[in-house]
Picture 1: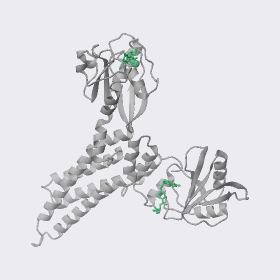
Picture 2: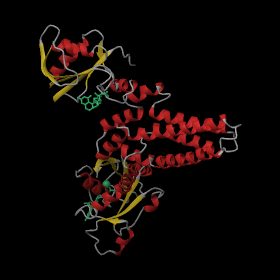
Picture 3: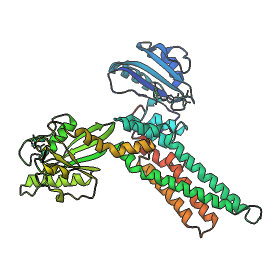
Picture 4: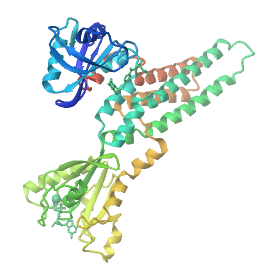
Length: 441
Ligand SMILES: Nc1nc2c(c(=O)[nH]1)N(C=O)[C@@H](CNc1ccc(C(=O)N[C@@H](CCC(=O)O)C(=O)O)cc1)CN2
Ligand SMILES: Nc1nc2c(ncn2[C@@H]2O[C@H](COP(=O)(O)OP(=O)(O)OP(=O)(O)O)[C@@H](O)[C@H]2O)c(=O)[nH]1
Ligand SMILES: [Mg+2]
């Protein structure tokens, strides 16, 4: 897509109208464009207030203009920003004016960022983090994205790759001097010790991938249990809104209902489902089928019953993480059945709801405290990391093979790490990754 001899432009701030709108221009013509539209020379990297005029000298707007001569810009190219009043007509007038200039065209989605990547301003992990930063809706998504986009994760991966390069150099040296008596064979012992250590470190990192994905994509929580237990009431009280129909008729909910919540900064994707029971009613049967399917795909099932009113737990396969909840504690204060539950709540008076929220995000909080947000998050990253780790295991376990073969496994592991950060083999990926960005980014 990118012809970097083109100068590209786009509205980079959000939807119009807005208080201020930022139009970005990047490429070889950018500085000339700034001079032409303002009729002045503009000091680099300084915000100046200028009247912005069309080619036939009509005033388009009066706004701030910034120039960033390459390579010291976001894209690494000559860049300019026009900070306009955010009216639709104002912005479109400038965009029309820019489109009419030879050598300029509208930027495609992600094209500014792609140029930044191609000019070495950031690696692929940082770029993926940037996309996540812009998509982030909760505090924890933001923190996770920051670790990626501001280099925290990249420095780990490049560190690992550098270690492997050093280890291979040591092996090469050992191979070269194999005939000579004065180089001790223990060099390779040290190398393998280091590789074991690296392999363990990568394993520990990979074990957290699932959690990283949950923080990025949301924790899927499905409410299940018998009819009339108060499942829809629980969804409504957690959402703070009257989303689901609540009645005292058993079998009220049929469809799967969904709401996204922000609990303690984590995205929680909550689903309410039909009550589970044996029934001949066809609509309800379909609802129950969907309820079971939803529960199967959950990260956590909230299994809700009215305290002491019978269970349908056997209808759910209990292989996954579930929290067994006794509801309507306001009606069953002294019932010995309260002991059967992980937690008793009331959706009417709010008992137990804060504890429930803590239980949902507890594991994520522990992870956060242990490793911050230095976690792999994307299937693409995880795939290459796994492949790299497998190569290390090959190198370590094939100790009957020659040093040259084992060293080749280390090279392959380093190559996989290079794919993560985009040091190597990146071309075919770029369209996929940058098309996910919005226009203007
Ligand atoms: N107005 C405005 N605000 C913005 C951006 C922008 O492009 N424009 N950004 C866009 O995402 C983010 C900031 N990112 C930026 C990254 C690099 C450079 C830059 O000029 N880099 C030069 C100089 C670095 C320096 O002076 O330390 C360089 O890398 O050489 C600018 C913004 C958020 N805020
Ligand atoms: N006293 C009391 N009543 C509750 C509580 N939670 C729900 N209810 C009542 O229980 C009845 C059933 O509530 P729902 O939320 O519709 O139950 P459900 O589990 O979604 O039921 P189905 O959709 O039929 O599976 C309603 O009359 C609610 O007002 C509670 O904590 N205390
Ligand atoms: Mg319901």
